[in-house]
Length: 180
Image: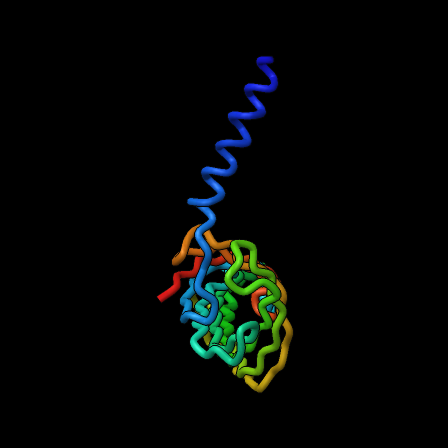
């Protein structure tokens, strides 16, 4: 009897909170998200956590939404050459147009897959510590890229979601999104 009562209370709470906490997102609304990730751009060393910004503002259909995506990462690495030492600094910035197909638009759990076309800017520079009569090289590179991404939005309410995604840069990221 005690077990049946517990199951009844649990089921009642589930129904009660499912109706209130899983408020549905209005599909096709503009969303803005910020996040952080892991990997991409060949960066390692200290401080190589990519920071992301995503704005989805273009409703192409009920399931298809477009927008822009940007990511930034910078890192440095000290090198020691016995009598001299220095530091490499690396920076990577991408800006891309993206389109995502949402498999369950408006649902609490909203998986998606998409494509992106963008521009990548990378730079590297070297600086010596102390006595330097040596050259301090630097280089920049950039170019267009295309990529794919997959992930999901988990809507906490009508205006806030947590997103996990895998793609080009960063390889894996987590972000928080807000509906405007």
